[in-house]
Length: 270
Ligand code: BEZ
Image 1 (cartoon, rainbow, N blue to C red):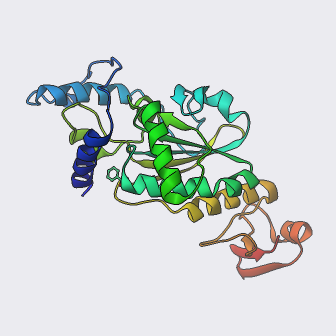
Image 2: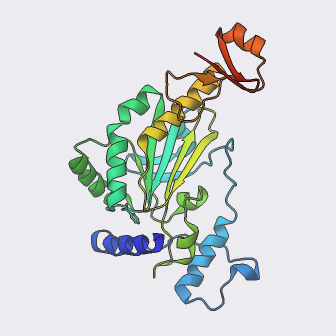
Image 3: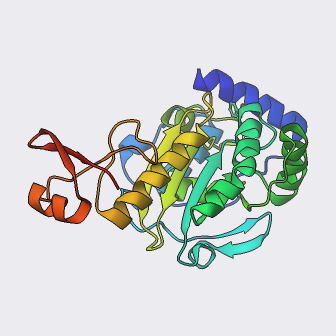
């Protein structure tokens, strides 16, 4: 499925945009298992790309969001400087002028006030250059009747996509004649200490759910402020959970009423 979608998106891309060739030189694979000796030349070129990605940092919840410099639709940025001690979401797209991505960016653009209210900066990424992004934003604004105001990273060479492991295993081996892999739909929520607090990865075939992105931000920010956790499908205003590390006596002092369903499952209101 991903392969079919990726192939059709590649055809669409060729018709609408110029996708530059991979422009960064990377280390050769180091182990025999990483080298497909029967591969056609473009595949070998691509495998060299994946070998370099094996040096990427492991991105776990709590890891520092790796820094990078990149061109964006609002000029060159140093990512850590751009974060500037704020909450942020970094979200990626496979390519400009693709249908699902167009709907997603329109939706994120419309929700900019909701992210701003939560103190969350937004930055998108797509694997094309700035001039392509500029033309695509005009389409997004027209289709979704919005004005997209946040920057979109130009990641035509997939440097940031590989740094953040925003790539699909199938696409790693299912490459086009340019020897490049598509970027998947990833979301990283980053906190003011630059720690990765949430990751989501969606296949190219499935658009994300903006309400869920806002919901987890609400949960993270509530948890940080109040020292509570949130149950399944929690929404702002619902009861929260007293974490196991807090005794019921302490929870009562802190929150007032505590509803004990099981000794380990205790709800309270905030
Ligand atoms: C899209 O519709 O956005 C899309 C679909 C397949 C591959 C890349 C993008």
